Length: 299
Ligand code: SF4
Ligand code: SF4
Image (cartoon, rainbow, N blue to C red; front, top):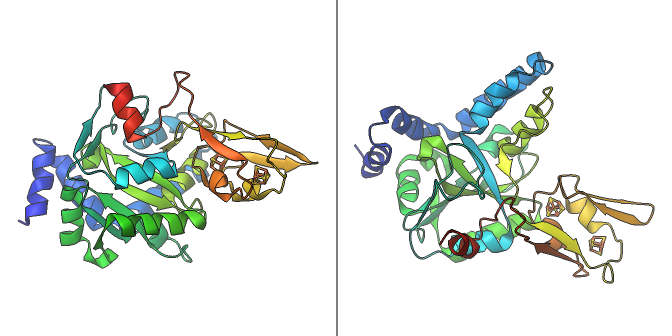
């Protein structure tokens, strides 16, 4: 048995079923998301009128989901130099899910990138397809030993940030993924195109089911966007940049829908007039996965 495989089994202890799930998930990454999306499409097509279907969707979404990251948050995670272990008891305001909610990054200076399974599922995916980044030695070692077919390669922190910044410029948001099958914790940071990302597409589908409007496979970052009216030129760039219909400009008025905003920060980066900024207000809601803030809040 390869060393990285043995570590997967050690991670899950007596839950051999989860270790096998973990192993198969990354070995058949593209097939896995293809089946998950297809199943969601079939369920929604046949049962969108049937409210109890939301229990099935909730069961799946509680086990696999994402947390949206601002650029600053993702930069701090990529540049970590020490192991971080938080949760699950203290992290429910960051990742408000029942099971996969631990922030565990062992030896996070180890990084690797490989093809995104969601993009491989698409006929004409956004380019480049190499946009999933593993953070932490156990997962990096596993990918390097088992995932050569997904063009995996080790990268430096600088390369990771170059990938992130170039993809953000083409409308990709950053998400940290949490999964029961990977020990209930994060390990992968993805650059997600809202057209390709299965978590975003599955959420849109799930919301078509009667009573499923609040179901989501991804948690907003926890930030809202603030506009300085004195700087805003009503140019419309922010509305065109936003992929979540959170900004509308009509008849010379800009409307911001905070309930639709996921706090990805793309509009802030796109505004050439410096009129936008992110704000976190601790009103008892979600906390951003800003590792400095998290340590402060949870210490
Ligand atoms: S991009 Fe900036 S200047 Fe343009 S409408 Fe949006 S906030 Fe205003
Ligand atoms: S308004 Fe849209 S682009 Fe801006 S942070 Fe919110 S979701 Fe992202």
